[in-house]
Length: 262
Ligand code: IPE
Ligand code: IPE
Ligand code: MG
Image (cartoon, rainbow, N blue to C red; front, top):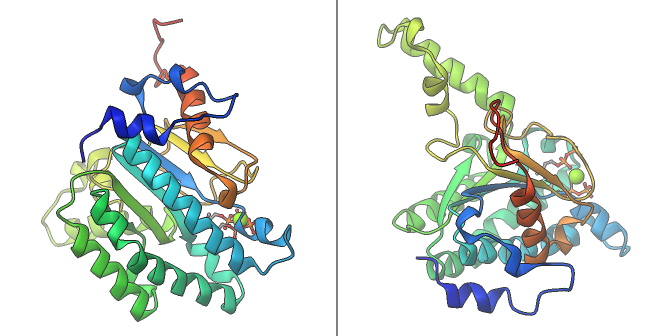
């Protein structure tokens, strides 16, 4: 869906006092935003609820952020939903998350159709429960023709596993004679990462006050601007996204060079 000034204005009307919506430069909105959606458990605990309620509330936050990204004309949104280390959680929580992923995907297919969102999936799908994997495959095929926002969902994703996998693929090509080790350069590795062909994220947001990457996109975040917020993921809304983008737009990206705009 093409960017529409009217739809954008309507979605970002009535801003809180501290959010300078008019200060945003719509020509410099990040092309790709990555989010570590953290703090669902603490959100629930503060309300004396089971952690599962926090995960369910996190889905509403994600829907708002997807819509906000569409209205802003962001090209890609990558969200960290389940890490390779998250299998270490109690089985009940893992099972709940896996069924929440499947049910959310089915429930939100109309949103994907309406907003022209194309799904992408990052991680090793083979290790997911059969019904969760089948749902993901359905989501991928049903949204393959969409041309608006790409929504990349990282489930059973670990950056180290992703890089090791790329190394394995390239090594196999070399031993079969298809490729020479001298041809392995940054582009060759990038082509085998789950994120290909997305550009590297311009902005990474992590919620809940934690300031670490937790094995997320270690390669792709090399020059990404990072914004950390204390807001817990279920409370994160379009205004928090706008605050993060305004912070991003105040930064000077140098990519190792010198900038001439300071
Ligand atoms: C993030 O919230 C969601 C997942 C990791 C699936 P958490 O579940 O990590 O919430 P906290 O960090 O325990 O509050
Ligand atoms: C990172 O959050 C993974 C996701 C948000 C899916 P965690 O809550 O698992 O990370 P740590 O354990 O605090 O580093
Ligand atoms: Mg956490």
